[in-house]
Image 1: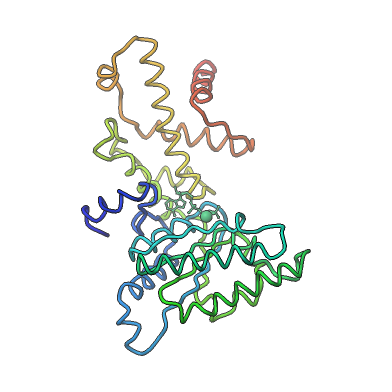
Image 2: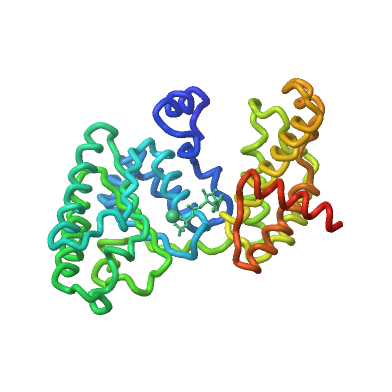
Length: 316
Ligand SMILES: Nc1ncnc2c1ncn2[C@@H]1O[C@H](COP(=O)(O)OP(=O)(O)OP(=O)(O)O)[C@@H](O)[C@H]1O
Ligand SMILES: [Mg+2]
């Protein structure tokens, strides 16, 4: 982990949510292990040169949505102080002939410029399947052949290109073009699976701790039973857990706002009267979220939460 000073310097030009390190990613043990190793090689090129080995330049992360693929890519970039280039594949894909291949070229040219500035560039290709799907299952084969060929050329060129690493992620590994994912282009292919029981404990801890910063006046209570939270969140992804934690904060904020209006409190009075977020608050949100998942509905918003809370109370 970097020093507080280093973090402060970085915070100047990066949003807080981008300040992700491996410690901020729960579970994903295998992927984290591989990427930690890679970050050591990136930071210490003399280790790789010991036997003349080239560190892997293409890393493919696959798995179901919301389990930390993007977080891992950001963590890799931050751990080795690299420039993180977020390439949204759905944005560079175009219906016009040649445009996707040209967009791709532009991205690699930008990455080259960024390595001159930052030393290392991590190009992160989100939704990689939208540009790298197998040519056999595509409609517009001529244009797609060009995109895949351009991609292959750039991936092949990475070995000689100084310090550009490609991290790609997909939910659909099986549909990727086999030429793109062959060894030499993607040397590391790792599954980022949904969290197991222990992973969920880790992820809850990470997200609750995010709301225990000094600047937060009413941080989460320390008295949290993580084992129960992990057990009650069967089938949850990392992003589901993050959402439950976020909702617990929102709900308490809505309640506080309600109290402020109803009792005509000053902000100072509100702060001293408000209680911390406790285990039961999280369990309530967890139950509500599970119900919503079952109904396949999602309604988050200040008003909605207030309404729901009142409705729930009157039903009790
Ligand atoms: N392993 C994890 N540890 C901590 N937080 C997580 C983890 N996985 C997901 N989250 C939370 O969920 C959010 C979404 O995760 P992320 O963007 O990394 O998912 P993803 O695997 O890239 O999903 P997609 O396939 O949809 O792109 C994160 O910003 C974080 O708040
Ligand atoms: Mg992602």
